[in-house]
Structures are given as C-alpha cells and as structure tokens.
Amino acid sequence: MKKYILPMVCVLIVMSFLFIYFYPKSRKPVMETFNVDSVTREEITDELIVALFIENITSEITKYYSNIYLGEIEVYNYEVKVLDVWKKEPGLISVKFGVTPQVGAHNPLGYDELVYHVDSRGNKILSGYEHLKNY
Image (cartoon, rainbow, N blue to C red; front, top):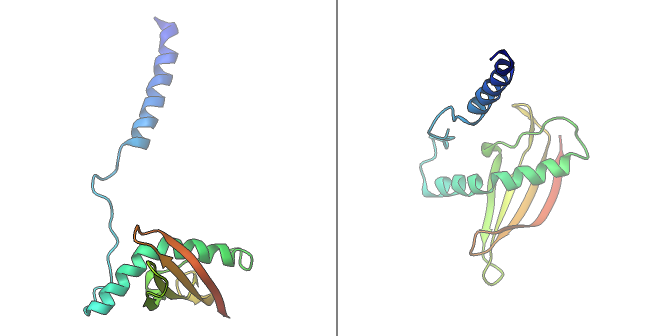
C-alpha cells in the first residue's frame, strides 16, 4: 500500500495542474468596448474597420519598428485613423490607415500609412507601407 502513495500523489498533482490550466476562469469572453463618444455613422464605421484590421496593422508595425526599436511597441485603436476607402481594382476594396505607434501610453514613435486590399472573402493583403515620420 505504501508503494502506491507516491504515484497517486504525483497523479493528483498533475491532474490539479491540468484542471487549473484548462478550466476557464470565466465562461464569457472579455470584450473590449468601442469609443462611447462615437455617434455618427462615419465614426462608428471607422471604428469597426479599425477593429477588424488592428491585428494585421499591429503585426506590420511591429515588424517594421523591430529593426529600429527594441522595446515593446503598442498600437492603440484610437491612434489608428481610416484615411480613405476606395474601390479601384475590380473586385477589391482598398483601405488606407494612418497609424501612430506608441512606446508606453503617450510616447509616439512615428507615423506610418498602410494600404490594404480586401477581397470579397475578407482576405486582407498589405499592398503599401510608408513610414513618414520619426518622433
């Protein structure tokens, strides 16, 4: 009986770690909120477009600035502006963003403009990246 105690304790420890790791803290996902001051259709549409592109924009900005800056770079939704939306090529919609990446909360790192082409399936392709300003 004593020789089974150590394996049973090890199994219980492993099971407790697995339970803690895989058990969700909350059944509902945490949702970020949009700007409560946005009221016009254009402001709401711009916020939605930025929210749908923020991961792609952050990835490209981080990739560009990794050659220049070694610290952590933040791209906040409120520092991304939709500059233009147009339909030039057949079947594609283009979106141009102006982005001011930050170091910390209020230290701008630069200013960049990114152009994405979007197809009817929602695939986003970066077609232009222009670094315009360093701070």
